[in-house]
Figure 1 (cartoon, one colour):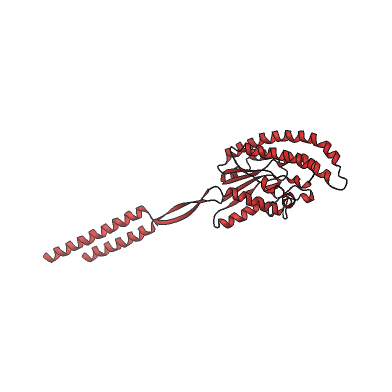
Figure 2: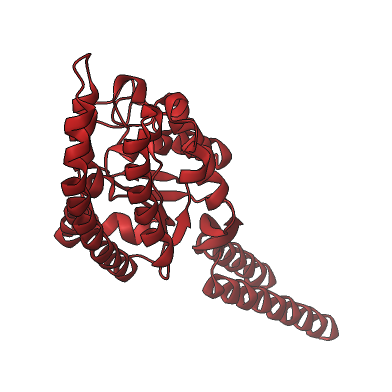
Length: 315
């Protein structure tokens, strides 16, 4: 009889222990990380962040040129190894502020806006520079007519002034719409002056004043965004940092490297949060209770066995 009680207790004990140990549950452990490198970026704008004019650029694919968004993408992937980084460049060459408003309103970038730690905007150059392209085209070749260009400038000034009014209105709209769709930090870049390379005071004084007004609009309306000031670093270096020697206003490879450094410095002034996740497996509370009950049952069985053995000896 004693052997039977002991055998049954042992079998019960072993069975419940094995069953309890198989009753595990998983738990996701979330770790919060603070960094000065934004893991997820969204670039919006025109041909400058699009990378127009760089080797490897195409209208249909801006991911294979060394534009400053792509430079930062590689840099930040290296700095945040193992982290789920994301760089989305939705810039479109030729876009104006109204085009960007239409993109935001379309809802096509809503998911990117929700996920982004930072949104970097470079827009508005086409709002005011389109009329200036006529001046640049007029300067090409040996038959450039400075007097005809000079007579054209007053009318051009009126057109640009009107464009600047529209630019300011649209910039406020863009800022409001972006802030309503993202919790990421919004940055807006100023515009450099590519025409200083021309070296003709009549033209450079005119365009310089208009671009200065353009940049003042950006800085004076910076209530819901942070300004990244590109302008000073390009001053006096238009021939080195843009394609103006070929009458193309866009930054060259060196210009994009410089913009990348400027943007990087500004972004690194702030902190960003990302999370990592680990799955831990442990015995469930039910299993722990079952094991404890099993141990108690085994102890009771042993005690009963001891009592039975003592009574047997007395008998």
